[in-house]
Length: 297
Image (cartoon, rainbow, N blue to C red; front, side, top):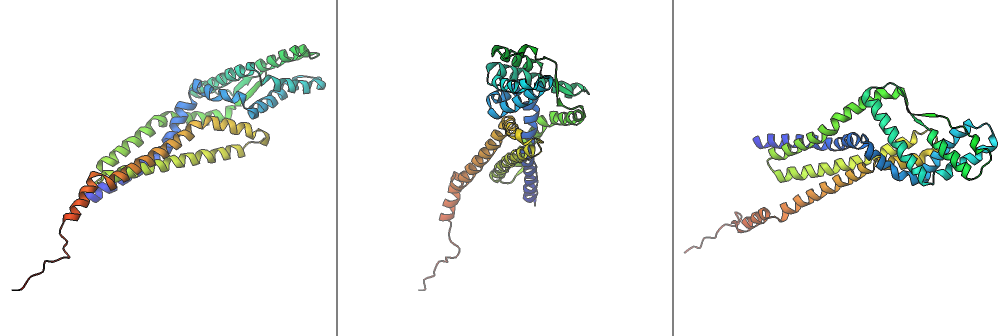
């Protein structure tokens, strides 16, 4: 009876721990990955050379500058200049500084309780495009107005919901992985057969990693499907893949680690010294089906 209770308690603790694995990894990624400005900027930096991202930025910036130009004849040249600018080293510098500024503004709005929308100013990019046109000897390039055009990155209506989510992730990012580890260790400790408990924990961890990878793939599909402009889906997909690269790596590591530990436990249980002693004792034990024959005098 005691052995059954121990096994039931162990199975419950291990099951809950394995369920917390994907959620803990997701919370830790959001709390310590996305919330770190330097890590975010380094993650987004390679996207400055992605063709889809550059085209999307050129379309948005070119449309914003074109609205400030009264002469329609210059608008195609402006768009070409913006696309040319996105292929320069100066654009990569502006891209990094822009991402750093936007990320810092979002964090301040979430942490400090600011109720204003988070915006980004296109004036630095407009200045760079104006200088590019002037170097190309474009007529009337100096007449392009450089104004502080604020583009909303995070509307004020979404700040309250984002702030609540950030507070939850800030706590869950630490405690969910710790709780999962404590429950798994406790479940293995109280189990009557610890090798089986370790095997079950390893397989559950691998299953949690697979579930995490599936969730990332489904999230990508849903995110791209909700975009109002289908032309920007390649750029959004590249950004999503860059931000979730760590999650995909963690999911594969969980699957590989879980399967490796489970296979090791199975091999040691089948070919280990304990299994060999059991086979040896079974071979030397007398067979009860074979009774000694009596010889009559």
